[in-house]
Image (cartoon, helix red, strand yellow):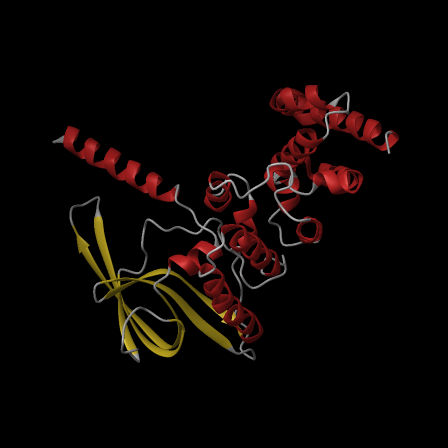
Amino acid sequence: MQKLNLLYFLILFFLVNTHQSKAQSLRSLILYSDAIVVAQESKTIEQNKFLSDYYESKKQQTNISIAEWLKTPLTKNLLKNIIVKDSTVVDFIIRRPEPVESIEPHREYYNLYFLKKTGKIYQTLYSKQYQSADYDLLKKAIPRLLSIKKIKDTKQKFSATVDWILENSKTDSYYRILPIYDLDTTSVFMRFYKQKSVIDTNNILAPLQRKKLKEIIFSDTTGYQLAIRTELVHLFYKDFAKETDAFLIKFIEEQISDLRGNEWKIKSALETLYANNKSYNTMADLIDNYNWYSNSDNGEELRKKLNNFLTEAKADK
């Protein structure tokens, strides 16, 4: 019996982690949804069932009164009320956790539900409460993306999608699930168009697109740390090498004051810089032995090595 319980646990662990690997971006969420609705009113009922003294089954049902359909399902009649079963579809998980936002009573909010439909049953892919200004922007972005989906020419479709991603990835935006992650060369979006031979690996983005991407990343103040995502920076580095080096060096310098709290950010920034510019003499040793230096003498060895690097980097300007 104990072996069966252990086997059950391992299977469950495997399935959960398998599902988590399918993390998605906002663009994928919009396209994968069968319907997107603005809820006038919603009420959730939760049913719990104890299967044993260590495992509990939870089922949810949400009754939604619909104020507006932003993406309509393939059906003749649009209902005013729908029932959503089981509040989360486990094989569609948002890429990044969202910051907790306080609700301000004097502002107007809209409750959006991104839904998947199986037969007559809807399931929630994602739901969020948006302020009115943010909702207005999202309301324009959804139909635009759906119209891009219909473009037949693959090169034109790729370029139009990149433009949409850049237009809707302002780092002070309402989305939080930034579409910009689709530009990471490891994403499904980029790998798909690479397989279709649409992407020129030397110049993946057009010149204006590279400039816009650089501006988005350099203006990031949300804590997403876009500037240390190597695959994104690589897309525009050749056009703005000196500016990017200066930005990353300044970023590293600013993080050293709280070395313990910012170690991973500093390492990622170093790796991003080194991936594009290997001219700094102290860089390779610092990256290769980063963890060792971090654990040596309560991090003081790491601080010393980082200061040596910054001295070299500033002298090289």
